[in-house]
Image (cartoon, rainbow, N blue to C red; front, side, top):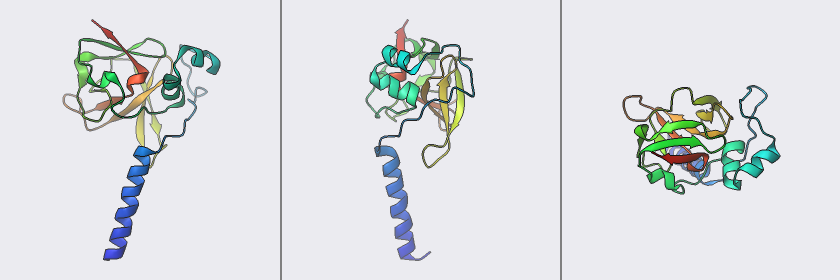
Length: 164
């Protein structure tokens, strides 16, 4: 590869990375036709129940800004519930500081989540949903600590912390 092609490829890579991290994501409707959830509500009912930010993340698969959630630095003992339906989804015992700006866990509570493939950006990711209401919680990556090696990178606005 000559110097010019190398510089062009590098510029494209940097620009693509910057755009994917800094442009707001286009909201996507959650496809509930493929899966039936225990908690079902109309869009209007969800909008009444959730704040606009919670609706954007949980029901339109949005992402909150990094370092915007107080739950990122919450390290007290307790349980993290889905903000949409109050299902316990993560325990403080599996929480760790990933330094990403989002609350991160190395494992969910058994049976609490569902996953799907997300191809909305330039990479394929595994999306994490509440198994009871289908609410979008975040994504899971294979760069977490032992014992699982997983990093469940969650949107704080999609969770409620219950101390205890």
